[in-house]
Amino acid sequence: MYDLSGKKAIVTGGAGGIGRAAAVMLAEAGAAVTIVDLDEPGGESIVRQIVKAGGKAMFVRGDVSLAEDCRNAIQETVEAWGGVDILFNNAGIIRRATVTELSEEDWDRVMAVNVRSMFLMCKYAIPFMEKAGGGAVINNASGWGLTGGARAAVYCASKGAVVNLTRAMAVDYGPKNIRVNCIAPGDTDTPMLRNEARQLGEPEATFLKDSVSRPLGRIARPEEIASAVLYLASEGASFITGAILPVDGGGLAD
Image (cartoon, rainbow, N blue to C red):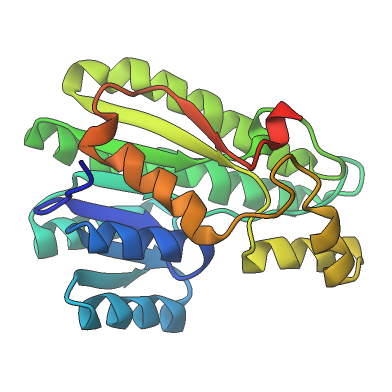
């Protein structure tokens, strides 16, 4: 069910956190993986880890908010692996602020990385999926794409856009056998979550403790989010498209 042998995958923001965990899982399932990130040392490190374990991976440095970098990442993947079957649009950033606190530059940057990047990566990857007879796109949204959050205006706006972009693309590309879904993670133990504490001026330990207020009583490990990505990329999800899958320990149910 989770055999991805012969598949070619791209993971944006794959040098750390959820992206790193997803890249490892996709490679373990047999996919050849391209990791796209600005963090070259982190990206090269995960490539070495995958290759050492017997998998296939390469790193492409790129800013996924830029069209040229997205085109290049797709082209290098096609040249190296022969196509694109799976795209995990994972790259994202957060700025914790209200609309009156936000600078215009921060608003534009978050929207560029969190939304524009998905548009660009899909724009250049989907034609190759169409030629191959199908594919799977998984977008990383957030629980805050489905509900509001304090001092997170632009992040909530960007992730809400990801949710409805996913639905619209599922409608457009279903006839081409391209499935488009998104995950909506809750708080996950990543560098980005710890960076939120610094942005809010809160002690990291206190911030992480407050993050466990959900039915399962803890925050997620990156691998727990990545397992949902693996599922949506696999034949196990062959009749699922346009879905928003919360992976949040019951946070949205509480």
